[in-house]
Image 1: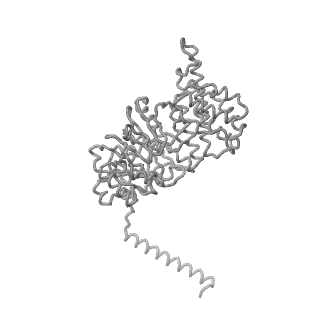
Image 2: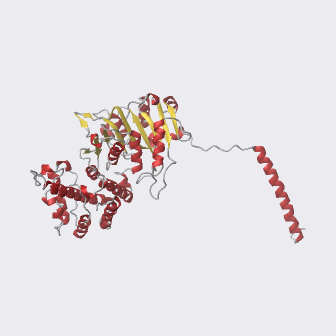
Image 3: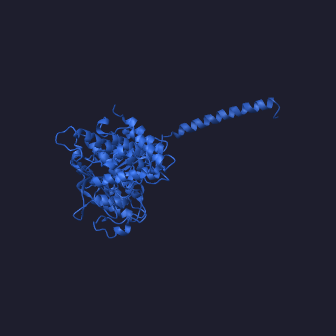
Length: 490
């Protein structure tokens, strides 16, 4: 009987319980995702191998017959025979897989299972036994994306468990869905996340295209990630979702952008990102001599890298491209060089919308956040204007994090699509008014959310007060009468 999503999620979460006490929870993901990925490749390989045996002329031992060929020492059946030095055997399995499959180069070898102090043989044997209980071939899963969805569930769980470390590679699903719905990616587009993390924004873009009748195979996906372990998770995530052609590169996006073509930055139809908030040491020294001309509006301060990421993304938009990016509120109103950068973006009519998000949505930080929507080519009705949306009051409260509900997302998307004033929620503001405010984009400056005070009739209040004074005098006289009868006063 095929696995259900709930059964698979439960099974994967139980693997974390096996690791509890052995390693830090922030590191669970590396080991569990590694074994999950290995088991998935094995089960698909064995399924394909069995089918090839019934095809005339096909050679089941020929690597070109497979999407991913699993060599002997990487096969699950071999690993199950290992009783000692299990971590070393798993490492060798990963090495063999990468040697055989160029698309896996660097993805698995960064995960080191060969540490007997942290991962003794008995723990790894329990993990192997645990993963042996589920079959993860294509025929074992009722829907092709089920493993990817279970994988996303685990990423969210680990982000919750790992706190700030989790937030570095995972953006909450509601925020991702909102960003994608605002950008409306389409079939045939090139889509990039330059701080890609675990890849959720690219995957959600594909889901959005499919849900709107597009062909997900006719989409080009790109991403760059600085952290090696997170890059590995992203690569595995893409492959588990069947997105084998996604180009995910390693490196520092500001210091060393890798998505280049013939010495020029690649250009994209959609750019979507949640960069690290207010990054210190983001690479200002290198940016002063940037060969790509990305910082035409100015260099941000050394201790705030936010607008460096924004300018990089703007530089990678094609002539009709759109950008959606999560930013801390500070970039909306901080002065000096950041004010100068805002001025340049506004005067070039690039900023289309500023959307204030609810508090405490993100793992590991309570910093208030907003979404910037930037368009290289605005429609006529949007030109020289910016839509401000104050959406911070609509959310589902949570114990650790708040979350966006489907109705909250729909309300924001509808307001952006309409691009008109909505009382106490949204307002379209002219560039001239923003100039008068010295390019300050603080949302509260433009959207009044204060509750109107009820009008007070002073004459009625005076009559009520005088009536109360009469009642007070009557009660006081009555009280003194009782005290006199009781002999307490003369």
